[in-house]
Image 1: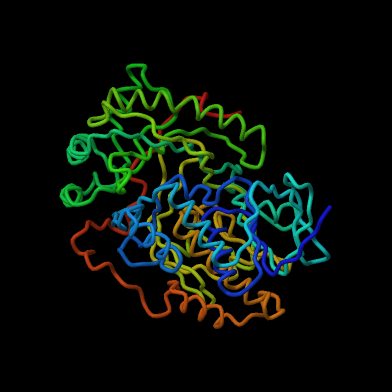
Image 2: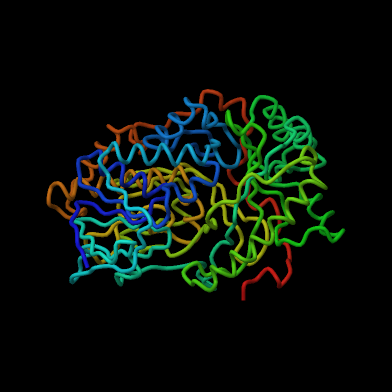
Length: 490
């Protein structure tokens, strides 16, 4: 068994892991990023990016997320950031060019990226996490780090290191339903847009109770090419009644995409199963089998029932299941739904969010939602409780089941990663524990790098007044639906 020593070790090369490693490397720390696949990006290379703004169109995420979409956009590989009344804002990102850019930036920052390396264990000495064990084609290796950042998405480093974690809802432990995303090409943009503008199709259910807001949004569809879908329930019901659709999803969910090389595509977020345990290999394997079977059926549904999709074709199936929730590592502070709804700020905020609490129901269909105000993410929520040397970023930060449903989206995960990587590097380079590094120093470094942490107020988008705004108290526009027992994995 070989061994190596680093200042900062990041486990997991998704959006949060990329940002953590890049921030650490740019801060001058010797940084290793461990990724089990042959590419970096994870789920961020399969989805549009939602949540740069809050629901009042205030900018809550900048920094590395801004840099990434800006660089891709200038090359024609990402859309402009488009506003949205429920999700705040979004950008379509070309998945493969994003992988190329991310790896290039990491290497330019001096980060060592270890591909096809599987995390297998955590090294703990007393109350300190000192490294991890990885397995690769080269064998088994101990990797030591002054600070380890768990960006695995599943809290694997924490769980193997005996660190406290939670999973799922308080009452039954169920996590949000997962999705295997796929993309359709060959969309007739004009016909599809006209269907979305027709209130009879109810393409965006959140707007249905507010006809004037729907009209305002329908007008906006004339000027934007990237927009969110969450409705068409009547078409889904029609197909189900005819025996043409059996998937446990009752709405069309997804995003109309547009970049220079993907001008006529839809990202479809409709496959789903219930009862997944993302930490159990048998459960995961069964989930993959189920959702792959749903893809051909959904393609037939789009061709037969959805205007503008008659000639559509499959472009790509994501290389991994989109797991919305897994283990949540307990930290020095646990972010709650109440924090988000109230827009709570903390003295040690190092990132921000403003995406609605978007729970893909663990035991039903569609989603439940609560609107939020721009909120702060404190450094304490990125530091694992009762141990030294372990931080986290991404969907395994210290938060409740409800709060993680907001903090899990890609731009916010990038902000969390940038914060964790910056703090870890400053700690490692100064020979301190993260808790001993002055918060003002971490915040200053983040602001200097362009991150948004709300110290000087938030900038509202210059076009905000022309976009529809949902009432803050609006919630759960769509009731739950009873779906077949066959949707359950167990």
